[in-house]
Image (cartoon, rainbow, N blue to C red; front, side, top):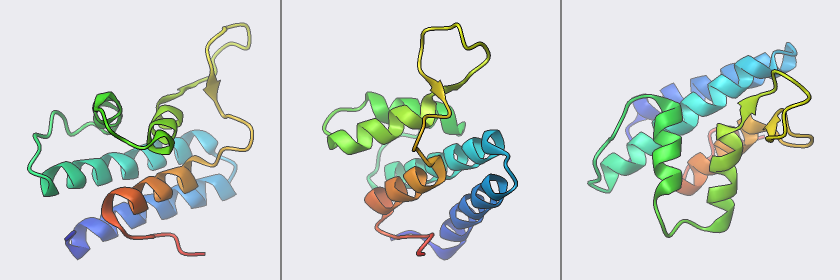
Amino acid sequence: MTDEKTLQKIKSELLNGKKSQAEGNEGRARVCARRAAGWAIQEFLLQNGEPIPSTIALELIKYFAALEDHPEQVYQTLERLTIRVAKDSFEEEAYYPIAGVDLVKEANWLIQELLGVNLLSE
């Protein structure tokens, strides 16, 4: 079971992400979504007696994505959380933002899957 302090920290970061979206700052929202997801992954690993390879959100997301036996939707969400910011429209790789993808909602969904709580009930 996740303690209230950890849940509050994660929820606060999700709310910061929503606020950033409302202000049109998708880059900051993306960072907030990653940070919240990283903390949730860290908590999930702790609860399951697994090692914590890093405290950096992006590294935790990549580490978790490399583990086997997740449902496909979890892998898809993890992949979207790691997509880079577009610097040049001529580059061929996929970049954020992806049309129709709300990373704050995606992070909240992942948190529900990992910790069993919906922190952004709407």
